[in-house]
Amino acid sequence: MLLEGKKILIMGIRNKWSIAFGIAKSAYENGAKLIFTYMGEENKDKIEELISEFKGSKAYVLNGASEDEVVKEAFTKIKEENGKIDGIVHAVAHANTEDLHHDFIFTSKEGFAHACDVSSYSFVLAARMAKELDMLNEKASLVTLTYHGSTKVIDNYNVMGVAKAALESSVRYLAENLGKEGMRVNAVSAGPIKTLSAKGIKDFSSVLTVIEEKAPLHQNVTTIQVGNVATFLLSSMSDSITGQVVYADNGYNIMGI
Picture 1 (cartoon, rainbow, N blue to C red):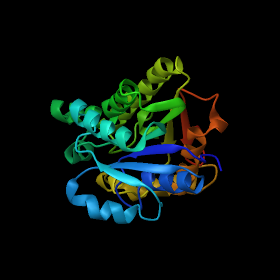
Picture 2 (tube, rainbow, N blue to C red; picture 1 turned 120 degrees about the horizontal axis):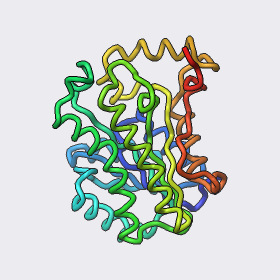
Picture 3 (spheres, rainbow, N blue to C red; picture 1 turned 90 degrees about the vertical axis):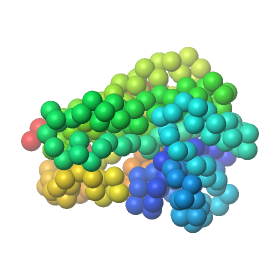
Protein backbone atom coordinates (compact mmCIF):
# COMPACT_ATOMS: atom_id res chain seq x y z
CA MET A 1 0.00 0.00 0.00
CA LEU A 2 1.36 3.36 -1.09
CA LEU A 3 0.66 5.29 2.13
CA GLU A 4 1.16 2.62 4.76
CA GLY A 5 1.92 4.26 8.11
CA LYS A 6 1.52 7.80 6.73
CA LYS A 7 -0.55 10.50 8.43
CA ILE A 8 -2.39 12.73 5.96
CA LEU A 9 -4.28 15.93 6.78
CA ILE A 10 -7.20 16.62 4.43
CA MET A 11 -8.49 20.19 4.62
CA GLY A 12 -12.04 20.97 3.54
CA ILE A 13 -14.02 17.73 3.78
CA ARG A 14 -17.74 18.42 3.17
CA ASN A 15 -19.73 15.41 1.96
CA LYS A 16 -19.39 12.04 0.25
CA TRP A 17 -19.66 13.60 -3.23
CA SER A 18 -16.67 15.91 -2.72
CA ILE A 19 -13.26 15.40 -4.28
CA ALA A 20 -11.81 15.53 -0.76
CA PHE A 21 -13.84 12.45 0.13
CA GLY A 22 -12.59 10.61 -2.96
CA ILE A 23 -9.02 11.44 -1.96
CA ALA A 24 -9.71 10.29 1.61
CA LYS A 25 -11.10 6.98 0.37
CA SER A 26 -8.11 6.30 -1.86
CA ALA A 27 -5.57 7.36 0.78
CA TYR A 28 -7.27 5.24 3.45
CA GLU A 29 -7.40 2.18 1.19
CA ASN A 30 -3.68 2.68 0.64
CA GLY A 31 -2.91 2.56 4.36
CA ALA A 32 -3.02 6.21 5.44
CA LYS A 33 -4.20 7.44 8.82
CA LEU A 34 -6.48 10.39 8.12
CA ILE A 35 -6.97 13.73 9.84
CA PHE A 36 -9.60 16.17 8.61
CA THR A 37 -10.55 19.80 8.98
CA TYR A 38 -14.04 21.05 8.27
CA MET A 39 -15.98 24.29 8.55
CA GLY A 40 -18.78 24.91 11.04
CA GLU A 41 -19.03 23.49 14.55
CA GLU A 42 -22.67 22.77 13.77
CA ASN A 43 -21.47 20.24 11.18
CA LYS A 44 -19.55 18.14 13.70
CA ASP A 45 -22.00 15.23 13.90
CA LYS A 46 -22.44 15.13 10.13
CA ILE A 47 -18.68 15.11 9.51
CA GLU A 48 -18.01 12.47 12.15
CA GLU A 49 -20.62 10.23 10.55
CA LEU A 50 -19.15 10.94 7.12
CA ILE A 51 -15.63 9.87 8.10
CA SER A 52 -16.69 6.97 10.31
CA GLU A 53 -15.71 4.47 7.62
CA PHE A 54 -12.12 5.65 7.92
CA LYS A 55 -11.24 3.87 11.16
CA GLY A 56 -9.08 5.86 13.56
CA SER A 57 -9.55 9.17 11.73
CA LYS A 58 -10.05 12.48 13.53
CA ALA A 59 -11.73 15.74 12.52
CA TYR A 60 -11.08 19.31 13.65
CA VAL A 61 -13.19 22.38 13.04
CA LEU A 62 -11.46 25.17 11.09
CA ASN A 63 -13.60 28.26 10.65
CA GLY A 64 -11.36 30.42 8.50
CA ALA A 65 -8.76 28.57 6.42
CA SER A 66 -7.31 31.90 5.26
CA GLU A 67 -7.04 33.47 8.72
CA ASP A 68 -3.56 33.19 10.21
CA GLU A 69 -4.42 32.84 13.89
CA VAL A 70 -7.31 30.47 13.25
CA VAL A 71 -5.12 28.12 11.22
CA LYS A 72 -2.30 28.37 13.75
CA GLU A 73 -4.63 27.37 16.58
CA ALA A 74 -6.09 24.42 14.65
CA PHE A 75 -2.70 23.16 13.40
CA THR A 76 -1.20 23.45 16.88
CA LYS A 77 -3.96 21.26 18.26
CA ILE A 78 -3.61 18.78 15.42
CA LYS A 79 0.12 18.41 16.04
CA GLU A 80 -0.32 18.09 19.80
CA GLU A 81 -2.81 15.26 19.38
CA ASN A 82 -1.33 13.49 16.35
CA GLY A 83 2.36 14.35 16.14
CA LYS A 84 3.99 15.19 12.84
CA ILE A 85 2.22 14.44 9.57
CA ASP A 86 3.38 13.24 6.16
CA GLY A 87 1.08 15.13 3.85
CA ILE A 88 -1.52 17.84 3.45
CA VAL A 89 -4.38 17.86 0.96
CA HIS A 90 -5.82 21.33 0.42
CA ALA A 91 -9.43 21.15 -0.79
CA VAL A 92 -10.54 24.65 0.15
CA ALA A 93 -12.07 27.14 -2.31
CA HIS A 94 -14.89 29.64 -2.51
CA ALA A 95 -16.17 32.54 -4.61
CA ASN A 96 -19.28 34.65 -4.19
CA THR A 97 -22.20 33.29 -6.21
CA GLU A 98 -22.87 36.61 -7.95
CA ASP A 99 -19.29 36.64 -9.23
CA LEU A 100 -19.89 33.32 -10.96
CA HIS A 101 -23.23 34.29 -12.49
CA HIS A 102 -22.23 37.56 -14.17
CA ASP A 103 -19.52 38.46 -16.68
CA PHE A 104 -16.05 38.53 -15.12
CA ILE A 105 -15.70 42.26 -15.83
CA PHE A 106 -18.30 42.93 -13.15
CA THR A 107 -16.33 41.20 -10.39
CA SER A 108 -16.28 43.39 -7.30
CA LYS A 109 -13.08 44.26 -5.44
CA GLU A 110 -14.42 42.40 -2.42
CA GLY A 111 -15.36 39.38 -4.53
CA PHE A 112 -11.94 39.29 -6.21
CA ALA A 113 -10.12 39.49 -2.88
CA HIS A 114 -12.39 36.90 -1.27
CA ALA A 115 -11.90 34.28 -4.00
CA CYS A 116 -8.12 34.66 -3.98
CA ASP A 117 -7.93 34.77 -0.19
CA VAL A 118 -9.93 31.60 0.42
CA SER A 119 -8.91 29.62 -2.66
CA SER A 120 -5.22 30.53 -3.00
CA TYR A 121 -3.76 32.24 0.06
CA SER A 122 -5.20 29.55 2.33
CA PHE A 123 -2.83 27.02 0.73
CA VAL A 124 0.18 29.28 1.22
CA LEU A 125 -0.89 29.80 4.82
CA ALA A 126 -1.31 26.07 5.45
CA ALA A 127 2.17 25.38 4.09
CA ARG A 128 3.77 28.18 6.09
CA MET A 129 2.02 27.32 9.33
CA ALA A 130 2.87 23.63 9.02
CA LYS A 131 6.51 24.56 8.48
CA GLU A 132 6.65 27.09 11.31
CA LEU A 133 5.08 24.63 13.74
CA ASP A 134 7.51 21.89 12.65
CA MET A 135 4.49 19.82 11.75
CA LEU A 136 5.80 18.08 8.63
CA ASN A 137 7.85 14.90 8.54
CA GLU A 138 10.84 14.55 6.26
CA LYS A 139 9.82 14.18 2.60
CA ALA A 140 6.29 15.40 3.29
CA SER A 141 4.05 16.05 0.28
CA LEU A 142 1.49 18.85 -0.14
CA VAL A 143 -1.30 18.58 -2.71
CA THR A 144 -3.94 21.12 -3.70
CA LEU A 145 -6.85 21.05 -6.14
CA THR A 146 -7.18 23.23 -9.22
CA TYR A 147 -9.13 23.28 -12.50
CA HIS A 148 -8.65 23.90 -16.23
CA GLY A 149 -10.36 27.29 -15.86
CA SER A 150 -7.07 28.60 -14.47
CA THR A 151 -5.52 28.64 -17.95
CA LYS A 152 -8.53 28.75 -20.30
CA VAL A 153 -11.72 30.81 -20.26
CA ILE A 154 -14.55 28.62 -18.96
CA ASP A 155 -18.06 30.05 -19.01
CA ASN A 156 -19.24 31.10 -15.54
CA TYR A 157 -15.97 30.13 -13.82
CA ASN A 158 -14.85 33.75 -13.84
CA VAL A 159 -12.97 34.96 -10.73
CA MET A 160 -12.42 31.40 -9.56
CA GLY A 161 -10.24 30.90 -12.62
CA VAL A 162 -8.09 33.85 -11.52
CA ALA A 163 -7.89 32.44 -7.99
CA LYS A 164 -6.86 29.02 -9.32
CA ALA A 165 -4.20 30.62 -11.52
CA ALA A 166 -2.78 32.26 -8.40
CA LEU A 167 -2.95 28.90 -6.64
CA GLU A 168 -1.00 27.16 -9.39
CA SER A 169 1.69 29.84 -9.33
CA SER A 170 1.83 29.47 -5.56
CA VAL A 171 2.44 25.74 -6.02
CA ARG A 172 5.58 26.49 -8.02
CA TYR A 173 6.98 29.01 -5.52
CA LEU A 174 6.16 26.78 -2.56
CA ALA A 175 7.81 23.84 -4.31
CA GLU A 176 11.03 25.85 -4.59
CA ASN A 177 10.87 26.99 -0.98
CA LEU A 178 10.04 23.62 0.59
CA GLY A 179 12.22 21.70 -1.83
CA LYS A 180 15.21 22.93 0.14
CA GLU A 181 13.97 20.67 2.93
CA GLY A 182 13.12 17.72 0.72
CA MET A 183 9.37 18.41 0.71
CA ARG A 184 7.18 18.42 -2.39
CA VAL A 185 4.24 20.55 -3.53
CA ASN A 186 1.90 19.73 -6.43
CA ALA A 187 -1.61 20.37 -7.71
CA VAL A 188 -4.19 18.06 -9.25
CA SER A 189 -6.31 19.64 -11.97
CA ALA A 190 -9.44 17.53 -11.87
CA GLY A 191 -11.99 17.38 -14.63
CA PRO A 192 -15.46 18.71 -13.78
CA ILE A 193 -17.33 16.66 -11.17
CA LYS A 194 -20.82 17.10 -9.74
CA THR A 195 -19.82 18.41 -6.33
CA LEU A 196 -21.65 20.82 -4.03
CA SER A 197 -19.28 23.58 -5.13
CA ALA A 198 -20.00 22.88 -8.80
CA LYS A 199 -23.67 23.64 -8.24
CA GLY A 200 -22.68 27.30 -7.93
CA ILE A 201 -21.56 27.33 -11.57
CA LYS A 202 -24.38 28.17 -13.96
CA ASP A 203 -25.11 25.57 -16.69
CA PHE A 204 -22.59 23.17 -15.15
CA SER A 205 -24.28 20.11 -16.64
CA SER A 206 -23.43 21.35 -20.14
CA VAL A 207 -19.74 21.23 -19.21
CA LEU A 208 -20.05 17.55 -18.34
CA THR A 209 -21.63 16.88 -21.74
CA VAL A 210 -18.78 18.59 -23.57
CA ILE A 211 -16.20 16.47 -21.71
CA GLU A 212 -17.95 13.27 -22.74
CA GLU A 213 -17.94 14.44 -26.35
CA LYS A 214 -14.42 15.90 -26.59
CA ALA A 215 -12.12 14.22 -24.06
CA PRO A 216 -9.94 11.46 -25.55
CA LEU A 217 -11.44 8.91 -23.14
CA HIS A 218 -14.99 10.22 -23.74
CA GLN A 219 -16.09 10.12 -20.13
CA ASN A 220 -16.14 12.29 -17.04
CA VAL A 221 -13.67 11.70 -14.24
CA THR A 222 -14.75 10.37 -10.84
CA THR A 223 -13.74 11.47 -7.36
CA ILE A 224 -12.03 8.12 -6.83
CA GLN A 225 -9.93 8.56 -9.97
CA VAL A 226 -8.83 11.99 -8.77
CA GLY A 227 -8.22 10.48 -5.35
CA ASN A 228 -5.88 7.89 -6.83
CA VAL A 229 -3.83 10.61 -8.51
CA ALA A 230 -3.59 12.50 -5.21
CA THR A 231 -2.54 9.30 -3.41
CA PHE A 232 0.23 8.84 -5.96
CA LEU A 233 1.44 12.41 -5.38
CA LEU A 234 1.35 11.90 -1.60
CA SER A 235 3.39 8.71 -1.88
CA SER A 236 7.08 8.04 -2.40
CA MET A 237 6.23 6.72 -5.88
CA SER A 238 6.22 10.38 -7.01
CA ASP A 239 9.30 11.48 -5.08
CA SER A 240 10.83 13.18 -8.15
CA ILE A 241 7.72 15.24 -8.93
CA THR A 242 7.23 18.72 -7.48
CA GLY A 243 5.90 22.09 -8.60
CA GLN A 244 3.60 20.44 -11.12
CA VAL A 245 -0.04 20.65 -12.13
CA VAL A 246 -1.09 17.08 -12.88
CA TYR A 247 -4.26 16.78 -14.95
CA ALA A 248 -6.82 14.12 -14.02
CA ASP A 249 -9.45 14.93 -16.64
CA ASN A 250 -9.43 12.02 -19.09
CA GLY A 251 -7.24 14.07 -21.40
CA TYR A 252 -9.64 16.96 -22.07
CA ASN A 253 -6.94 19.59 -21.51
CA ILE A 254 -4.96 18.49 -24.58
CA MET A 255 -7.80 19.17 -26.99
CA GLY A 256 -7.73 22.31 -29.13
CA ILE A 257 -11.47 22.42 -29.83
